[in-house]
Length: 333
Ligand code: PEP
Ligand code: MN
Image 1: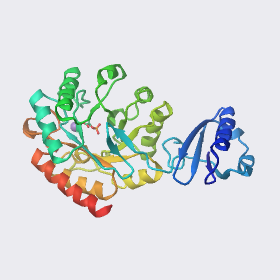
Image 2: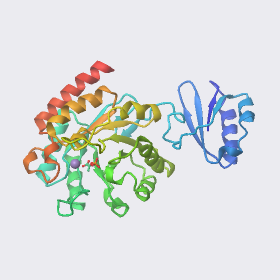
Image 3: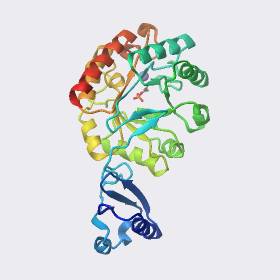
């Protein structure tokens, strides 16, 4: 249920109303907009007398929200959420490019790529240390050592870092990681999501391999209802009958997610297509349809990459991508 207050309500009257709603065993999400305050009520609202609420002098409107996602819902929080990662902002008009290799491989690799993507304009460095691979015989990531090397690259370049966490028990190793990524294979690992709800760091939540938007938003809800509101949604392509590409990039998901939710939405054109030459066109399209950022795989030597070489851009091609993306941003905002 949402309760929209009239403009310029005295703080003490607002507090009294919130205290009363809390006494009904409801969680109250306060969204203080520039002009209006919206109270999002989560819990058993069947006991709330809607007409009594509506009759209060400070209340403008009361609406029952039937969507199963509440905290992620734009109706509960009309303004865009802006996530701050060590001074780098994502969402609400702030565009952010995350780039780096699929996997961290060795020191010169990650530091070299980090410097290159930073020089081109990336604001966050990506690198996988724990890799979810279809085959158990494929490279599984450097794990703890990979995170150590990623930290070195962070120290060297000043770029905040993002890396995928696959397992709750690995969480203590991620102390220096600025954004925790939940991969497409773990979007519905509910125990992991609940645990990430107790972490004070931003979470990048990828859409499941064949996940619906509602499922993605419900997964965000798991994290948020466990206490962590800093969720970034990521469209990374879904499994369809696409034959020549790894996945199908569902770009209409971007404006739809923006309509449904206040959370930032980014696009990953690398996993969406699986082919390096498709990455730049789809990054531009993702930017044009309103994404709040991109996550792009970059490798200095894609032929010898230990994972996802076929979809990795060389640094010089990433540089071109950033230039073109900047032109699109300038054209649409
Ligand atoms: C990745 O970012 O390297 C990755 C494994 O992505 P996804 O979970 O989208 O497949
Ligand atoms: Mn990858």
